[in-house]
Length: 267
Image (cartoon, rainbow, N blue to C red; front, top):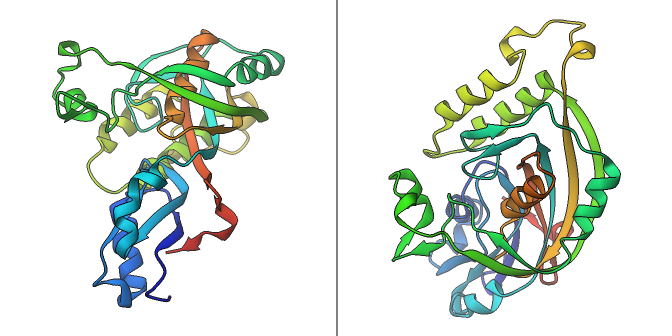
């Protein structure tokens, strides 16, 4: 690692915050420990992929990199709503019995393209009256404020895959992701909530049960969008438009400006 490099394209894994990623980077490359360093473009704990790290004088150009367009690939789990718009949240309601067709989903996905107003996730870093929304949510005071819509531009939206997954496999996947998250994000309470909603908890697996289980619908989409777009909001919006509910199951940022995931550095 050359100390003169100003911008690093690193791969942030699931479970850690951008600040954790910077710490890991400094541990891997001790020569960077004395340098000023920040990140441009936050990634949620459950998200992975491209994270830009600015070093030295590049720190003062952060706004420029924050404004870069981004591209994501996301898995959306339909039939559920949570207070975070992803699986790292408590269920508000679910419509597990409802189903959608690939044709309808493909049409609704293409409708996302263009300028669109999306709701901000209640658990997000957007500030109202100087306080992040997630603090208002944790304090149970969301009723005291009005959560604004955010105007954003989605230059392309594509349905990549549409499939079904058994409750047992789904729960195992959710448990693995939530258990990987560091910090206090209500993991215990959230896991218990999912274990109550989904049949066949992972500690009671039996051979031959997959065929008879209820299947849950999952879509994988790719979206290229302007800076500041919450992909969790896209999932919530699609679920609302389809009258079925939708949350992010997994999220990968594949591109920031010209920085692509294929060139990302592992930490």
